[in-house]
Image (cartoon, rainbow, N blue to C red; front, side, top):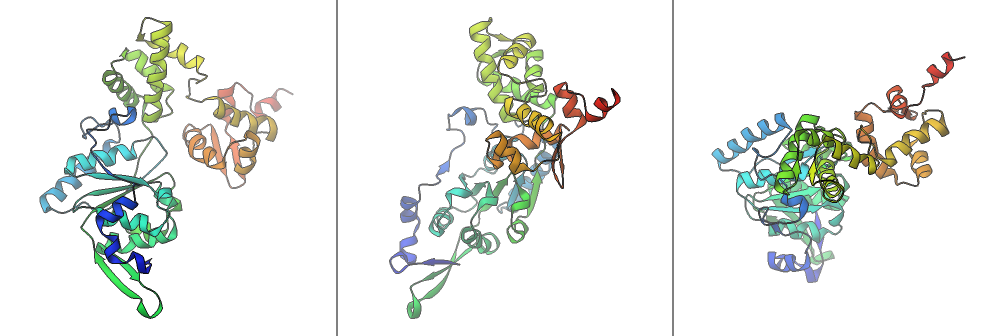
Length: 357
């Protein structure tokens, strides 16, 4: 329940005043945003590559919502960063013909932040909250009646003058995105009608993503060149799109402007990104565990301290792909380099070293 002071009663929470006080989010017209990442975002399911099973399910869900003339159920997307959670939320908004308001959980520090956003929503609009597992407890409790009953429970005044008010909200759809679904509280997770996991992309899917991005950015690229970049993109479209731009710089300055397989491989070798898509930090992590801790197991805090990296960076950026690729293992006692990780670095496993003697 949100508590408002005497000078911040219901009259002071009207849409216009809240929007002035809360510049956190604005309605986004997806067609109009011209930043790099948004300029290459798909606007419909036909141009959204990958996540085939999810797309088919969402198409049916959206069509049903249109036929019923009702907003979508609340959705939760989870999975490693860079797989398209924000993008697919934008596609859903475009397909439903409504505005989408985008914010992140850390930005919603005070009760009036989340109240202002909710009261400024129009019927059918989509509210997208990124990293929703980081919502503070007060904001989360304000969301409970908003998600279930489309109401806000607020208390104004103090002591004897205190009043409890239930303010109706227009029906809206909340889309939450998180890289750590396990950190969501049970009550919040249970209020989402649909929960979906986004998967890493295959090399073939990433090749199509890269060719599409190159076409939009007017970059000349061959099929083999796109596939070479895809192999080093860690199964992640965001990384693939970033590498396309970096390799195009090399192609323009050092070569004839066309990205073929040789140009892509030479450029990525120069950028210290190997054939598995591992960068300097990834290899340093594996080498650290092998050389300093006999291949593990070793705790994540120890690894982060030894690498002078934040624990969250190790968990959210490095680990997901290393685990997916089978180069790292997570055990109850800590992290351990797998035999495949040893082979990738060209180091003999302990068992292979033992057989030599």
